[in-house]
Length: 382
Image (tube, rainbow, N blue to C red; front, side, top):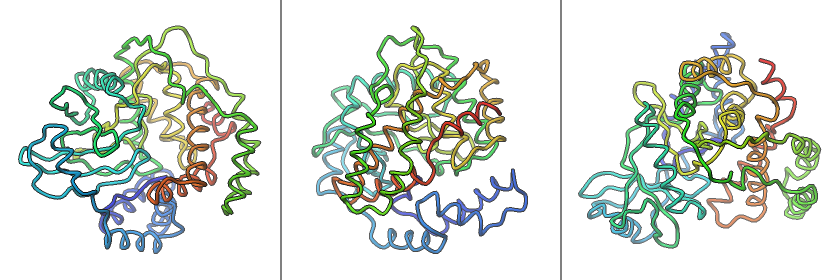
């Protein structure tokens, strides 16, 4: 589910709708602007264009305020100089809110990260990022604190800071043929690095909840009075069917981004892609990362054959396209199941209002457009 920035504008929405219309017309020339507007509203978890405009107006009227002392604390922790203005909210993500921070030394993007993203994990991502940038991938520059760390604890949360980079929005879904080709090329450049990794794959990509866990989660949703609880119940056989798709993991693994998805990418002024997120980097195979990535780039909101062809063409410009089968989606399936489970858990029992809104939208989104075995089989058949 797409999330609006914290300070959206109507002009921002209109441009997104026009961009989406151009994408829709790549496959259906008769698509209308009204259709694109409805589709965009749906991507943001809202019923129609008027509801989306109303949400933008609501957010613009009361933007989030930074906690007292946050700017000064971040500037001190990362050695950024003296804060010259209150930080401005940029966007809420699954990891927390991002802030635009200005100091007498420049402009920065400060983001909270998951607790498991330690400095060692950030160093791993930085090593992949540096190699990728040398190969031609675009990415922001991370800031080290005076102690030489990428991750610092500030006001009870783990933070990381990037130099500010002027970029456009994340790609609209479905992605255009041009964006799909660029995404494929980015994957190809990363996989062509062939950086070996002897670390184990992250548990989030290997461990799944049991059947009993899913039924208990359904009962919790019912007890919480969630309007989508029965939809969850009806989909449980589909989720459990996905459990039969297991990854084929060979002995040799490579260092991969592992979360190169559309929400972690921005478009530069010249249309190239900028990969914003590297802290999820770790061991995987090109086949497993491609299987996971394709579920994000060419299956959302539905299967997109033209985008699939363009993605493969972009990848093949950098590296030979590997042979994929159903097992290639094994890690992507595990990640999707865990994301779905955790989003529903958070929607049932949120930790704060921001997470409650985020999780509710995600829960509705994954239940409206579930991943299925049939969709994966159809993707392989293209």
